[in-house]
Amino acid sequence: MRRAAISTAIGMYSVWKSNHASWETAGCKGAEPVIGTVNNICPAFFRGNTFRVISDDTAMIRVSAYNEWVWMPVRMNHSDLKYIRKKISEGWACKAPAAEKAIRSL
Image (cartoon, rainbow, N blue to C red; front, side, top):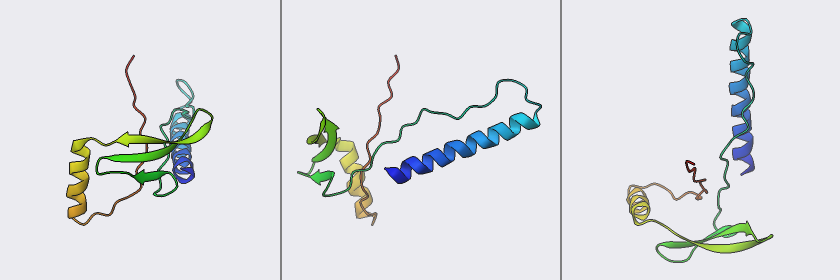
């Protein structure tokens, strides 16, 4: 997670620096660009210490909940499993899964 967070921070700074340079070149017209603070950095789960396959469609992930680290079951969608099996049969290697934030409209 640290590498992903660092990489994202570098990218956010790079975009800000470019936007700021363009803003200065344009004569400082409009609002000054600011560095974005919203990001969806989520951890990767590594096999053994944070991720365990329990059955064909269920895994356990280790998450921080209730002020401690607990194992929670996660069921995988049938369509996702079908896609994963297809890619593995094509020679792709399994990578560490990553969490994904669900963004909902209000």
